[in-house]
Length: 441
Ligand code: G6P
Ligand code: MN
Image (cartoon, rainbow, N blue to C red):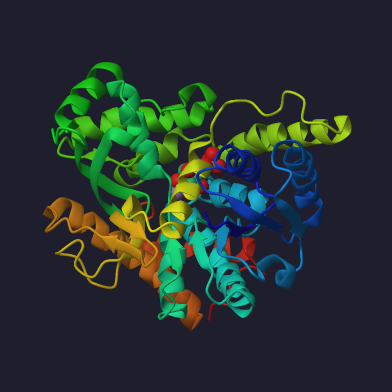
């Protein structure tokens, strides 16, 4: 079996620990030759890197493992680059959430004003990073799950129009499928979904039993109305995530045709969400108080002890597993199904061809082959055309350095939806993102 070299961009992320452990657990399935962590924040990455040295020394000694802040050392010879950058780090995520909420609008990592603010930061850093990667690893597959994936995907499509080895992916559709498997009491891999939308804004039209072909969506709807909706790994989740999944029950009462992605709550109930989120303690605060502390404490304990001890538990990491499965599909030409972000080109028949949409694809060595869903209903189409326009206008704002385009994006957005509010929040976010956004004229 051929072995592969992988670089993780954003080595100091709170998600890296789960990836390191998953690469050990999945070593038979996706054998690694070399793993490199890359980050611009040396101090943060060093802690994860030192943990990694101990982990691999005990569990995977033949693996070549490096962590570095040097782009050449990071990218040269790589087959896959996993991109999990967070432009501005968690402190800027906190601002994306706090500033809109302080003005009475949804404050969220990827949706609304905060999502567009993060979009402009992320695009600046992502485009630079992809140019660096292409200098040292022209043929590497770039698997991007940096957020906001919709805006990043649109900007990368424009900056690298002929690059067929950039793939944008989000784990949330698969997470929803996994949640359905928990409700049904079946293995999630026996579920065969049909899905359409934009990133963080989509719907399942069917969820088939892969063995019998039965559409289980009616059964899933009944189960949700009786029991509510929980993430597959509810026992490991913070309260805000349980609340988010819980909202799926409400969404299905109001719009019963399809099963929604959890992020639909922000688009469909912007006022309710804005008034129920705590402006003094948002998800970024919850992450900094929770996962960030847990991850770095665990690493420091292992480093101090010099040995892994019992810190290689059996809790699997769905997010890391999914990304490794995606790499495996490409590496071994598996042509199995994944929900991916791709250029539309007719996958959603009544939507514009150059929209970056999220649909089921077959994935192999030659990239994704999207599966068509035909025409979507007018309601969903209306919502998506509105949002894809925001995403495209933010990309315009970046490429043209245009204040006007940013203002139009903010005005259209369902979580703002008013020209005067749009200007006010845009001006506040320009101030907060000085040096991280392009200079908008
Ligand atoms: C899901 C989404 C990601 C998002 C993440 C945030 O996995 O698909 O796009 O970044 O949630 O999770 P967190 O636990 O950091 O709030
Ligand atoms: Mn996502």
